[in-house]
Image (cartoon, rainbow, N blue to C red; front, side, top):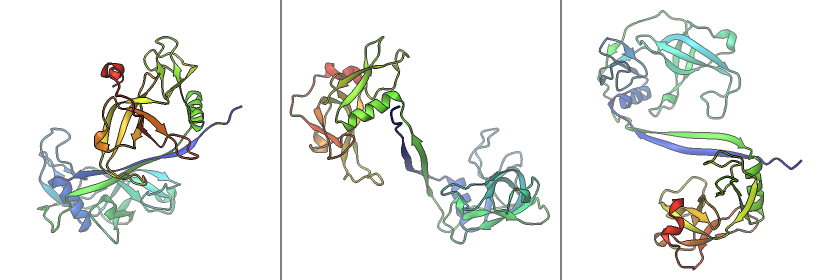
Length: 314
């Protein structure tokens, strides 16, 4: 039985967004240990606040301060916290309706075990020692015996040095296991060859192979070696340096149609100034010593390919 290939992969990027007046006031308020909601036209107080009424779509701007105590409306126990979750020890995910609010806020509850958590229990906010204007300024909720107070008070939403934008990291860790077709493709790359698979119906050669034709929907099995040379079909100039990628910007990332393939693959273009890369440029792979895939593609010196030769691969 052949070895099953697998590899840990991480997809990660920082998501940056600017804040309107409602979200800015909410997050700045957390920094100042103040929880703000927004009042709707029918008098409901929404926490977290939103900029438009989810029922009527009316724009909302009337801010109101609610209490830092509340009631658990529902919960789920997390026995094994993952990396970057709010607490390193087991905790409960909870929806908490803060006193004075009509909706619930999702956060975590620090409790010794699931037997200590119940719907209807009273809790309060535990503030983070260092706060920056983010939802993590609420370190967690903790059990707290108190009476329910339904009062909320109007708030201007004005603070010194308001938060106007946030950066939220998005990350997905997973283990990738290729199937038969892509395992053959990866093993061929380790031998500095590129193989695709031909559809028995439309006769197109797909690289990388997927085990089935995306056009006809039939299984593919016939292997076809393509390249190694190819043609740049489209490209982009990258001006933002990626984390953990030791490549100086600007550089060019392109779609490359290898000779004999009916699908363009991705690759970095090197060996030429970024502003001289063009559609139709003929390129070939460059392999670093011991590498299992091409490091980049460089110009071959051949004349550019005619547009008609690759227009169907754009």
